[in-house]
Length: 327
Image: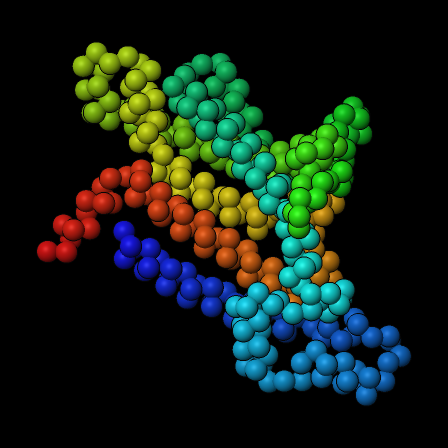
């Protein structure tokens, strides 16, 4: 187990180095940030002075090594546009994105998995057919369109929920949360449904397919022949064996929620990291863009590491196969 963790940490380190290089290389050649930071009538000397101050006149490898060293020490540099440290800007925006992703992930898991189990056990029922039909909507419609339709119906027509913003938040040290205020909770509903709807339908269809496959296996038939109750067979044997692929997809999808929250945050003007990334692109704010990409990659690496560790807990075959292959 320890060797597995060390091996995965080394692999994760290589992945993070590759992502840091790609992020820095891509965003460095997106444009000259000096053009968006100086007045249109700025002289050549003023432009060169600013370029020297930002370190943009250094060779590429020097800029990358400086960037890499700063990332390792948690110093992400200063934003070209705002002029403040990127670390403090991200720390200010990070709680909004993580709370939105957390609620969307809980919505996807606690709605998608039970619906998948139900449609798998009652495959010919009318309710199951309705659920599968509705799931096509969640899979087919793009995220921005779902968000706009929810705003139109629940905010414009009914006036029940706010259409933008995070509502009132409470500061707990450096963390600002909307979980402790009524307006903060109401503001979370529409964005979290928009962000988590695709994952909800995906989990439902995945769990349903796995349940149908497992229910046809011989050991399930043997369990029924032993006289076990339907509840024990369905939830004690069948559902447990569907968890491995669900854990895999859930890990990847939760990482995707963080990365693709950009669209939802833009539609609902949610003050998170996605909205920060969009504004950074407009002003060619390289430190913010590259730091955002590295941070998202770090979330992916951590989530995948946790998923691999859960494999060892859920699937005992992974703990048995490795000594056998060593001979």
